[in-house]
Amino acid sequence: MSAQTADEAGTGSEDGRPAAAATAARKREQQGWYFYDFAVSVYSASVLTLFLGPYLTSVAKAAADAEGFVHPLGIPVRAGSYFAYTVSASVILAVLLMPMVGALADRTGRKKPLLAVAAYVGAAATTGMFFLEGDRYLLGGLLLVVANAALSVSMVLYNAFLPQISTADERDTVSSRGWAFGYTAGSLMLVANLALYLGHDSFGLSEGMAVRICLASAGLWWGAFALIPLRRLRDRAVVPEAGAAPAVSGWKQLVATLKDMRRYPLTLSFLLAYLIYNDGVQTVISQASVYGAEELELEQSTLIAAVLLVQVLAVAGALAMGRLAVRYGAKRTILGSLAAWALTLGAGYFLPARTPMWFFALAAMIGLVLGGSQALSRSLFSHLVPAGKEAEYFSAYEMSDRGLSWVGPLVFGLTYQITGSYRDAIISLVVFFALGFVLLARVPVRRAVEAAGNPVPERI
Image (cartoon, rainbow, N blue to C red):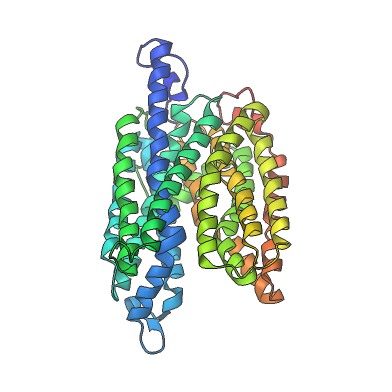
């Protein structure tokens, strides 16, 4: 296993310097680390959540034949399904790349150069979406696959820095601040993009040009603010494992990582709980607008405003839950957030149609628990990762977050298909939060931290 010095765990002196200097250096890295969330969250908020899906679908429809099909690689694909299939393709590519890159980062200790490559490949692909117009659906699909996969790979490397730049007792606060920075960026750029999009006529722009500028601006933002963490973060020297190859195929590396994780069954138990309740979280995020439009009969402007409200309140929620974790521990706070998620879905089931204010109240509830539950899950998992395996283990974590969240949408879709009711579909997601709550409650996190060979924080 790779060696880890005392300063990598955030304790003691650094490179022979006094403890005060080591603390200052650690804080500087933390401040730089926050800015990667600030850089990349605009892509998730503006590109994936809001603009790209409808726009790429319109481009695909412009290229479709008389029967409504496009033919990427000679395969007939209904134009309305092209965006969803492209997202799926990006997930497959990410699943192949994440464990391989994670293992390479751990074995070489060169997380920062790999982060730079992933960040700027993703930023360049996103900026290139400015040229997505007319019938260039193949270009749009290619750029989406590259940008999405690059995002996932970069998040593996970004998250892997967390245990190296923070002490055990700082972890929850640092992770929560990172999420808060990200949601702040998403809110700022979302306001600017919405102003440009909704007022495109007054700016002398077509609707398509306004969307293309919004897409490209997310890539420029990503690339510009990625410079800050790349300047402040630093790589740690490692001792390579004897006989270990620097990289193998994605699937082989994933199997090897999971085999290694069997030595830490409590870490695997947490990952299983996270996989289940995070599937619920991701499904609520992706299906809330469908529920609002189809079941509650709300206007598109209402849904856009609700997305912005979620982004704004997620900042406060992430910071507030970070403070709660300091007082009550991350596990208890996450359990509380899962109960809040279940109550939110219950309230959503009873929302009356055509009442925007109640939908905004639901969006506010989601925003307040969204950032905190994600931030604290990340910080808690970081305690359960053995030293020297950060990027490799976070590749499995990231796949739980981005690559395996398909069961929830399937349950949602099947419930609607069987019952014909989106209300039944939304309430069916409670099972993910209930089961995740039970599984997480059964994980003895202190023993899990000790088993991973890490210092146990005062509250966890």
